[in-house]
Length: 567
Image 1: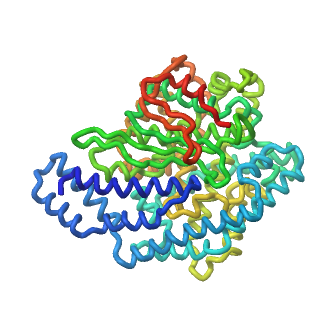
Image 2 (image 1 turned 45 degrees about the vertical axis):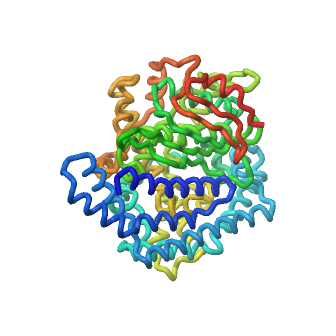
Image 3 (image 1 turned 90 degrees about the vertical axis):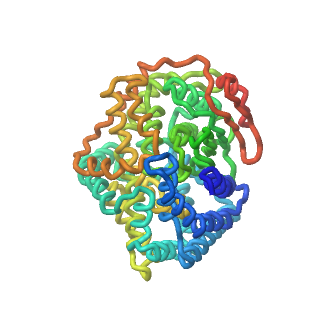
């Protein structure tokens, strides 16, 4: 077996599996459990493993072939499952898929509005009764997710981890994704929590003094402290303007996509997952001949050309677009390296790009309603100041999910019950935020319900902390492309080797909010913004299976975006 055949055989299955997962999240159907089994069959093929081992012995050391084959051997050893482990994960994947479909059918049959619509009511309605009613519906939907098979799923994940030799699923996930221990990860997170407790609780007390105790309820908090959901600026970022602004920002930063094939679903459909995400369908490969990446991206913009939630969707577009830029620039000779990216590192790159959407300079430069109206400087700066004021609480809010998942998987099997999970969530969230209730029902976080994303939510708050450090480094190293070189250097590989050193460093630092929004504003003043530009990728904008438009390399991206019709 030559290296090309090994990699192509694996990619044919891997790509089919990722496409199936994508279709399921888009509400288009799929057969991911069956394809996952085929993927595991490949990874567990003893003949493949022995052949690679024998070829390594016959190879000259320090050659590219030697390193690629060793990389594959390590990847197979990490992913190989025995018969019991394979049976367990097949059962688990099937159970998760059935649970998701069952809950989604329940939600549709009971006529609940989409979760995004309920979140928007909580963020924008001036009537507390409407906000409280929307919150009540969200908690009812949360109950549907928690009931049924969820507790069984938690126990089965822990059983799988035990079969693999780990004390619980969280330990397995952290070591699998990052190559570090759960202890090292939470040493860094505990350090952040301890160093920000005083500032966090002071922020909460100040909110209560300014707005009354009722502001500490989840359905009132977001009206006062906006997140990316709630914004008076929604009308200035309909999908075509948001997409154009994203493209212009990437072009101004001279970010390359290396000929990638990109699919973007920016629609709002009932059957589609509400969570933004990016799927690496096929990694970029540099063995013998270069093969560009294939990537799918999903963001939910509100129905029509404008509406509540467009700023949130724009933020998600930059987050997922940051993933996409990162993946397009991981160019390895070995497929096994390209598919093995540190989750924390990947999220830190996405968080880095999110910062643009909270910059007054960026919003004033790019925001435009469809009738040509521009946002006013005062409303933009008021929005950004309020958003920045709530930033620490947002990070700690995300940490609630990470600490909750850790505690869930550390429960004895017999104690994994809905009432115990609710009690854990209330205790952890109260400690983490100081609010009376979470800013969002914790068990509505979709990452909890899929094997591939569970026990990994820590990557998001960790990424915020790392992104602060990255922006500080960019500014210290001057502006423009030379400042961004710190990002481009990280992109050259999957980056797994640097995570332990990075966390060791962070665990010894006092976090004092080293990020300042002014960093981004000052950086943007040094950027040359192109009036028109192209992107070195093919981009298909879709709504499910329906094509909305296709961008080809060499065309005007501005003209392409202006022609798009999202109605």
